Image (cartoon, rainbow, N blue to C red):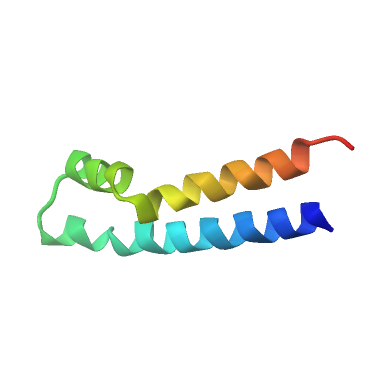
Length: 65
C-alpha cells in the first residue's frame, strides 16, 4: 500500500512539473533562446518537481521487496 501511495505521489509531482515545463515553452515564441529556456526550467522549483516525481516513480518500480 505504501508503494502505491509513493507511486501516486510521484505521478502527481511529475504531472505538475511537466505542465509547467510545457507552459514555459511559450517563452520560446516571445523571443527567448533555447538555452535561456533551459535555464528557466532548471532554476524553477515547480519544473524540478517533474524530475523529482520521475525519480520517485523509478525508485518505486525498481525497488525489490
